[in-house]
Amino acid sequence: MSKVVRQIGFDEGAFAAREKEDVVVGGEIIRHRLSSRVIHWTVANTFLLCLITGLPVWTPVFGWLGTLVGGLSVCRLVHPIAGLAFAAASLAMAVQWWDDMKMTKEERGWVGPKLLEYLRDAANHDRIGKYNGGQKVYFYTTKLAALGLLVSGVVLWFPASFAPWMRVVAIVLHNLTFILFAVSLVFHIYLASVAEPGTFNSMTRGTVSKAWARIHHPKWYRDLLGLEKKGP
Amino acid sequence: MAVTGTLEIRRSSASVWGSPSGLRSLPAVSKLVDTSTCIGCKACEVACQEWNDLPSVATMNDGDYQTLPTLDAAFWNLIRFDEREVDGGIKWLMRKDQCMHCADPGCLEACPAPGAIVQYENGIVDVNPAQCIGCGYCETGCPFDVPRFSAKTGKMSKCTLCVDRVSIGLEPACIKACPTGCLHFGTKDDMVALGKQRVAQLKAAGYASAALYDPTGVGGTGVVTVLAHGDHPEWYGGLPGSPRIPWGVAIWKKFLRPLGFLAILGAVIGAFGHHLYHGNKGHVDPGPLDTDEPKA
Image (tube, rainbow over all chains, first blue to last red; front, side, top):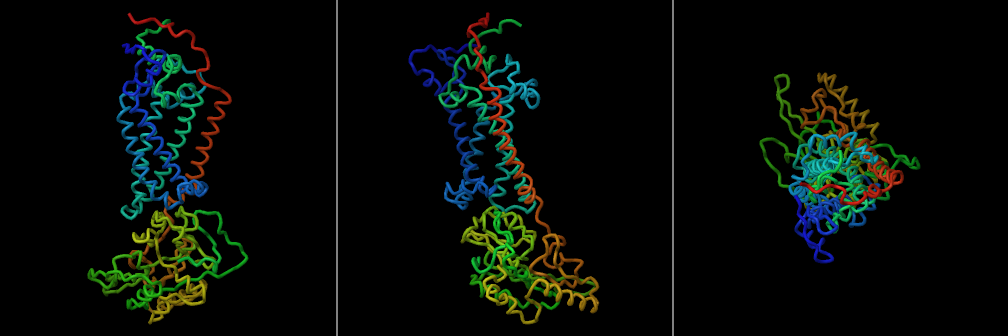
């Protein structure tokens, strides 16, 4: 179904992107409305704060990061609070994006060989909608990791309130979920910036070009413009 | 209560610095606690509070002769009291609950703040409040449940083995105060020898399972304890039979940390490599945008 907004001004795309998404505005398509972008950058920045205040506690190799915020004592105070904000923002994101992230059986293949095909630029994109399987896998991975970080983080925050074995499990779980999150995040940042030009814009201005949508998310593009796929 | 400058530091938390230099060599020191001659007078508790200028902590009477239920941030030396029926008779079992000054300290291993926990060349394990961030990881790392968080100072605290006294040639305050000769202080070797002598005496007196408590799981301790019922250390205020540094601490520092570091670094290198090899995705011209047919 087509939701084409008539272009009347130079920056109509950015204006429309305050409230709407999944609509075509002139040569652009709005991919993320303002609230989605605010939630995304809240998650990103609270995680960045957690990273700056957490890495120096994780290993003294990153002690210099702690110096940036005023030392390890400040890290100890700020990290759990930043962590709560990160968990809250992650929850908001999970709620807002949940419907778009439902996975088809085919998309579950992205956990394995399909992802490598994609990275080799050899995947068939025809049936990719607004999000591809890899993005959905990333969504679930990060939300699961955020939950693990929250649960173990609360235990580490108040060690005297929990049994010794719970504290030991929490240390291991906080390590594991952080590593999972951080490794996924490296790929997310790479793929959403330099690897695929035009993608970063969707999270800043909120819009992508029609050409971008057609290359990366053809089914989403066809659905928005009311087109049928031509040929086999 | 760190005494910096007078004693060389053998190990320091969260830092590579602190390995033995070999320039100065001090023998490890130790307390010897002979529980069989402890009368539970609590002179050592008072001496500890006095010497270390610790405020008085409200005592609690829960039906036995123990001053407090457990150690406190301002109470570093607690005589644990257990009443137990052994071979048809009642035994009063006392044990000196305090920092054990492990040769391989779990608190130091778990501590993330560089220099917050140090082990001096003579084996004394100490908290340096200037570096401590009060995170409580040492509580998790300690197999003896000793370090305590002080809400007043925001720091951890525990027995210093009177390092300030020991470093100028005095014995710890608790040793000085003990009226029965139950507490001794000296080099670790001397204390182990004396302890073994006491164990032999106890065995001769009919305590067949008497033993010297110096657990190897933490590399031995700087507080060695003579137990008349050495086969049941848990009778003495829950003394762990085979204490070890919790597995999670070692997994974090020795396995997950290097693994995570390499994984994240690998992901960054992988991303760079991918970009150098494949270039931008979507650099191919998709052709005219209207090649698809409008829906009927």
